[in-house]
Length: 171
Image (cartoon, rainbow, N blue to C red; front, side, top):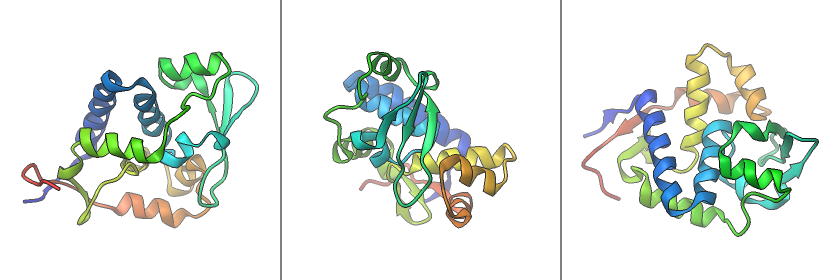
């Protein structure tokens, strides 16, 4: 039976997932941390040609899907990411979308969480951030600008999506 899955529970579960992944692989934990804190898509995190060093402490991510590029401060992210940035190295060498998705499917409550009637993907990090900013009172246009979205209707889809949890579900 599907039960509502509230934002606070989602945030706690995603943070616990990131913490637990750190035991297996610091790089992938750092990728998920970057997603959690920035709302980036997984492909934007792991593809080295999207990562551009700027004047310290900033870097730019060239986004997907026609979105506007985004600039970040490396000090906003975890220690592994900061160490790699200081060394002038791309933080996620040899990482891929498929391996990140594998970690997500096998170590998160992947089989038990649904957006509407569909299972979640790593986009849940983006959805979580959008819902969080919306609950803080930011308007849709501001959120779209922060995420580099060129169209506000994508933000509305994230905000309007319903999260559900089924503890008995196995995929």
